[in-house]
Picture (cartoon, helix red, strand yellow):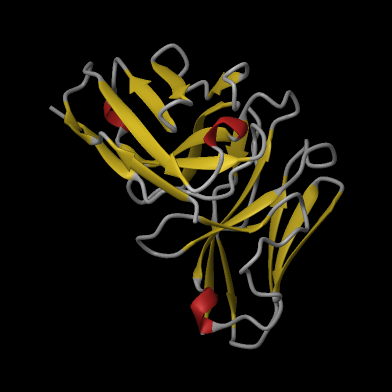
Length: 108
Length: 118
């Protein structure tokens, strides 16, 4: 079955740039999405269709996708950005959604 | 304001059934695809099932195919997930989410907890 691969953890100091990667064979043909999940809360969409930011999401969140890798970038990470981040896409058939395993971002 | 409110979770024995509901408001429900996603305790997100606005497209994860049935009632602005032959490994918080198309998930509900245990 199709898989999306993320690093388990990323750690940065406040104000630094955090980059979280997501690799998957179908990413050249399918959009990537990124969700932020803080402890005990429902996920929130932070990037859709590779690089679009929903209203209300701070400009420091950006996304990109090239080849088989999508990247979420948080420029000038803040303490409040500490959360689990999940990438998401569809498989090549477009019939199944798939999440990456999640990346725990620590900002301290 | 878009709101999604899940309900119907609870404790059920292995082999039992449960029906989850997701009440939607704040958007034109019939024009949006809807998705169920679950999260087992301490684990990551798992895509479960999706349905298009008019229900002409329905998809399931392999782990639930043949046991779960997604449906919607556009007159009631409500999404459903009928879960049969439940297994211990189906224990999770179940979230519903809306999207412009199948495969999109924009706004999520707060989830409803399902526990399968004897």
